[in-house]
Every structure is written in C-alpha cells, then in structure tokens.
Length: 586
Ligand code: ZN
Picture 1 (cartoon, rainbow, N blue to C red):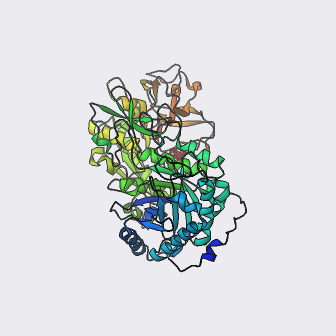
Picture 2 (cartoon, rainbow, N blue to C red):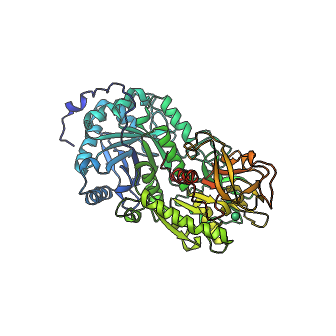
Picture 3 (cartoon, rainbow, N blue to C red):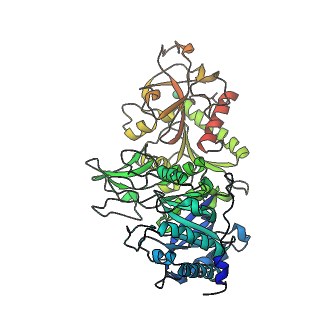
C-alpha cells in the first residue's frame, strides 16, 4: 500500500453545487465476471465493471478475484483501443462487493480502516491501469445476504463515498450498485461525490412474477424497473446520474430453482410451455399449460424497450449483468450499444453504403406469385425504396423467401417491408414472428395484411390488429382519405384530408380501431360512400393506415396497382412511415 499520504485522504472533497441536469455523454455499463473467459469487445460499452473485488480479511484493503483476468482485460482494451485518445477509451472499473460479499460494515465504521481501504483502491486503479471504483455493497444495514451489518451502515456509507472521492481525485470514476428500492443509503449525503448510480433493477421477484418487469402488470412483482427509477429520483438521485440495470438472464421460481443464465427459448418444450409477451409489463415470459407464469426473461424486444425508456426519461444510460450471457453474435450487447450509443447494428453493416455508416438496413419481402397488379407493385416498390436508399444512407435487400435467412440472421435488418404478401410457409412464419418478437420493424402494404378464415395463423391476426378481410371496392379508384390521429410522427406534415391514387382498399372485421393497442392514423373518408362500381361498399369504418403498439409495425393499405408511387403526398406518407419505424424522426 502506498504512493499517497494518509493526510491526502482525510481532506474532505467539496460537494459540487446543485446544477441543472447537464447533457452528459450516455453510458453503457457491462459487468464482466472473474469466473468467465470471454474477452469483452470494448467498442460495445463505455464502462466495464470487473466483478468482483472484496473488502479483505483484515478490513483495511481490497482482495481481487482472479487478478490475472482483470489484467488481461485491461491489456485487451489497451490493444483494441490503442489509437483512441484516453478520453474515448472504454473505462474499466473494479466492482467491489456483490451478493454475499461482506466486511463492509466493519471497514466503514472505523476511520482508519476506511482510509486504508480507500488508499488501497487508489493503489489498485494505478497499478492495474483502471479508471475507477464501483461499490456493490448489498446492502448497507441489511443482513439479507448473511453479511455483517450495523444500524450505522448508511451514515458510514456516505463517509466511504466521501473518502473514496477524496482518495481517487476527480480523474477517476466512482459509481455504485443500488438496490431497486433505493433504500439502505442516503443519497443526498453523498451523490455529489458520485459519477453515477447503477440500479439493480432485476431479481426483483420470483415466478409466478417477472423479476425485471418494466411496468406494473399481472405478472409483475411488487417492484418494477420504472418504479425503481422513480424511487431513485425521489431519493435524490438526479437523472443524469441514474443508470438503469437490465438482466441478460432469466429467472424462474424459488420452488424449482430454475435460474437459467444462458436460457435458450428454442429449448422450450412446446408440449409443456409457451413463450408469451406481456404488453403491460413489456417483457417476455414462459407459462405452463395451466397458464401459470413459470419463468421471466428478456429478449431483444424487451431490452430495446428498456433502452427507449432510458432515452425517453433522460437517464444517463444502461447497465447489464452480464456480458457472458450474450448469444454468440453478442446481439444483446450490440443492441444496447446501438440504441444508447448509436453504434451500427453490426460491424459488417458499417461499410455497406459508399464507405459510410449505414443508418439502417431494410429487407423488401415480396412474391412473384400473386395477381398481376400486386406483382407490379412489388417491382415498383423495390425501385422506389432503392432510390430512397441512395439519399438516406440505408441499404435495401430483397427476398422472396424468409427461410433464406436463419431467424437470427433476420435480426441484422432494421425493418422488413412486406410489399405484397404475408409469410406463407410454417418456417417463414416462425422466422418472421421471432424477428418481430425480438424487436424487429415492419412496414406492410395492401396484400401483406390480407388474411381470411383460410389463413390459419392466429399470431398474425393478433399482430395485424385483429381484423380479417371483409370486403373491397372494385375496380381500383382514387379515394379521399382523412387523418385520424393528429400530431402522430407519420402524419404530422400531411393535410387533414387528401386524395390518394387509384387502389383497391380492403375493409376489415372487426375494425382494427376496436383494438385498444391499435392507433389508426388514416382512414377512408365517409364522403366516398358508396365506393366502387362493381364491388360496392356502402358504409362502415374503413381504416387504411394503422399501427399495433405491441410491435414496431405500421400497415398501409395501399399497393394494389402500378400508379401507387405517382403521388407526392402519398410518397411523403411512405417516407414518414419508414422514418418512424427506423426511429429516424423521433
Ligand atoms: Zn389488390
């Protein structure tokens, strides 16, 4: 131990004055454990929390699990980022604590032990070339994890943060892991010393409740991620210092002890279990044949929604436990990096567009085996979207069979544009459903939503908003349309009423408008009735454009014929839809 005098540690560090919420760079914090072997890709996160170090047996310093691995991670980071300035490199922190890691209570209660511990933290960051210290005491004042505790822990925790900041100086990072409840510590006493606080918004329940639901629902435990954020704001943590933790693993019940870390939904026995989605809790879960929720997990969709929540709430960023739970493509880490840090979806997509970063990748899905007008529309759509791609920095691929892509390979597309058909074969349907349930984007035109009693695909009926084909006008004709939802990003720059080029329009039963998850954006004006010369529609609700909020999707009932891309207003609608689905116009 050494290098810095004890006196230096005793100086109290001044708490900065209370400031406005500053716009600080977002963070993605990844826990990397001592007992796994993957080398983290530092381009996918801003901070690595190496877990764990512990308060040593003599209460006056730090013991690190698997020091060799910590040194190897630092070495790896240095090599991978040797051309970056120090400020742009991924920061590596030592997390001290973890579930069941004790001796904090004794250490913090004695000023000499506490100072000695803080000096040892300083020694370690210098010796290992680290960027800071993260304290994961679970939890001050609690023996839930069978560790020592005292009623004075909370006050002493504040002193520890003060002394750590004093010892580390401003050049190093200081963070902590906080219980979802925001209890156990008194944030206003020490938040001024902290860079940020990571909320452990997981393990908050066991089956039959989800351990990391975002919002309240039937399957949510008494605590949710959004409640955890609220609790921290109320406890005095400002938004710019608040980082939401998400799990990369699932959790079952205490009863059967099923806590699969690298759980693969493809292993579910469909005879016994069903994978479900809670549109209220915004997380996937597994239920048994009795309808009981037995396992709560995350997928790309739920992780994406939590990222959106972090961005919408103006929080500092996201943290996850842990890096080793990624799939082989690192999809989870890539998603978080892309969402929070605006990284490209995959390394390979980065060079696709004229050497520049591709802002998004679209897959146009179509069939040649359809009525002539629908095939014409497909060809014209491909031309239309390829032209748009030149100006917008996205790439377009086309395909007539989704099975050509494994279900995971579809994930590299930001959206699928179905121009004249829904997926047909069972395999295509499974690939499409997996894609959408994992956060995929979709724009569908005209025949892409067509379904009737013979379609026999209940998931798709629910996806499309619940409406089956009822009837249509014939022959194709122009129509006066009206906006239904004012101020929606897709229609905000369109006139309240306008005429669209000749097309065939489907009417649906029940009307998608009756679905509470559906926002109807545009519909046929009743002023058109009666509509049609041969097949005549006399009345009824006739939505043309809508979105089902349970998915990242929009349906546009245009695309029967060969004149669909001749109208500027309608083209603007298509471009708006594209921007909205790919979140370019948020
Ligand atoms: Zn048609």
